Image (spheres, rainbow, N blue to C red):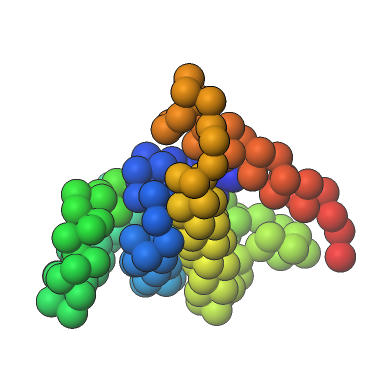
Length: 192
C-alpha cells in the first residue's frame, strides 16, 4: 500500500520518527484492516453487489459510504482500547490514532478488495471467500507495518548521520521513502 500506491503517507511520514510509535501505529492499522476488510467483503458480496440478497437491486453505489462508516467505527474502538491499555502509546501517537479512520491505506485495501471480488476466479488476485479477504487484510497490514517500522528505524539512525543542512528533516525522509519504494517495486515483477 505504502510503496506501490503511496496510500497512507500522511501518518507514515508523521509517526515514523521512532520504532516504538511506528510499531504501535502499524499494529493499530493492521488490526483495523483485519476487521474492516472482511466486513467490507461481506457487505460487497451479500448486500451491495449485483448478486445481493435483494434480487435485482444493485446497491454498489453505497459501498464507499458504508466502507467509511465501518472503518470509522472500528477505528473508534481501537482508539478506546489503546487509550485504556497503553496510555503512553496513546499519548505518543496523538492525533494520528483517530486519523486511522481516514487513512488512505485502509480505504484503499477495502476498494482494492472490492475490485478483486469481481475478477475471474482463475486470476491469482481473486478474492472469492472470507478467508481470502482476511489473508489480503493481514498481508496488507503486515506490509504497512513493516514499511513504517523500517522507516522509523532508518529515521532513528539518521539522527546520528551528517545530513547536509538543506536536506535535513523532511527532505532526506522523502529521498529515503523514494529509494525504499524503488527497492520494493523490484519485487512486483517477480513470478513465483
